[in-house]
Image (cartoon, rainbow, N blue to C red):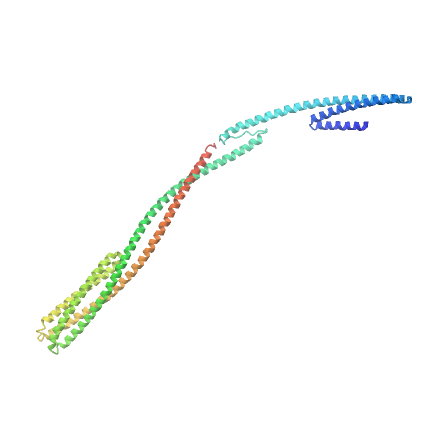
Length: 445
């Protein structure tokens, strides 16, 4: 039992020493005090137990007295040894406790000094960063060997990065402001140009509509002129037939004037018929002249498109004047024939020559009427072509008018888009100003 107890005490002493060396000074001291108390209690228990044993042995047989004395001496020796160990333990515990207290005081003093140094370094770093909080990005924190060295280095890197970022933001905002100003000027110019284009398109649309109306009028007039030309062609055809009949009659007169005097009366009658035919020719030439004059007026109203038609109308008018002149000549010849009818016998040969001349003139008049017929036919084709062309121009003008309306709608959409773009650019300019004002408080240089 004694050896086990001593072993337990030894283990407790080792545990106390280990706790003390490991830094748990208070735990080691507590274990040592408890161990001392336990040793004292155990010693007292052993002493009481020894006294009881001595009493037992005193009441025992006498032969055991010597052994009792020996045991008493042994117990006393054990008690003395226990007390010595207890005293030694108390002394050791006291020495260790004193050393631990001194070490704790030294560590506390060193820790306090280190904490004061760290606190001063942190306060110095905060003082250096006050200007940074005010927006001064030119401040550099002092990099030292204390606890704030790494922090100051990181703060300097952060301030440098923030300075580069603020400078970049400032440059970008200036570029955005410049770009938005140019975009606003461009948008304003585009808007003004779009408005002017819209007004010009409206004016052009009105002009196209007016031109379309004029083309329709020209087309209608050309159709009427084509009808008149067809009527003129029919009249010229009739005139040609009449002249041909006149030529045939005069040829018959020329053959009959040499055979019988009776034919003189017939000649007078034929002359009368010729006079009527000449009057008809005169009427036809007057109508042709009037038609040519109307055609010239219509060609003049057609402007540039009717210039060729004007030349044709003038040519027709000249032909009509020549026909009228020929008709007047024929009329004069017929009157001469009528006046010389009573003296036809004496002037037979002369009259025959006159008939020959009249036939020649009638032939010339027939050729002239043939030319008038050809010109009138060509004029009718030209007027028909003009009518077809003006109708096509009217359709094209309607298409152009619709296209101008589409262009006007597109221009209106473009104007709206330009206005929206100008508003967006204005908003972007305001955002750029806000961005510049947000970085204006930072001091970069």
